[in-house]
Image (cartoon, rainbow, N blue to C red):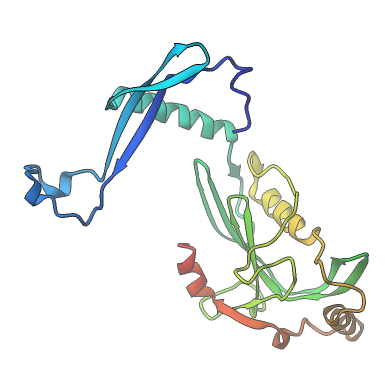
Length: 246
């Protein structure tokens, strides 16, 4: 949240300290009389913040947080989440998965193979085909893999490393300073923005005389699909879903 607390004349009044125990710890030897299953793994303590000298603050004595204060905090967080808005509307055909919670946005979608794409490189534009692509939006991070699927990925689909230099080995995309509104929009517009953010970044290293550029130009001249045999295997689609808890 990008706000100036001094301009809003806000002052700190309370700090929360969260204690967490190991859920596998055996409490029966410590005099715990409650049912072990009913013992929480967390304990939250509220500390008042004192200001004996204007502009200087100290942490006061702690006490267990009350349900009333927890309700106030939950209400404030809910208001903040509602202020951010949501992605809404009908699911586009290429959207495979969506998960939205306060502070979380995850979208999984795909592009089928394209016969013609405009690749941006170092001072050059290259026209050529593109493989099928799988996109994962994880908050403000984007992951992209090529696929061997002719269309919608399924349990038999394999993921491939694109080899493009703006994508790391784990699929993470360097988007530079790209900015856009990820909330208060439709699914269709959100997918368009993320796809545009990816394709409008320069594939640094893709120069006019590079092997990749020449391969793309040759495929374009021959009206041939993207040569998947040039890409290295990355993972299976099903294992990828498990790894990202989708």
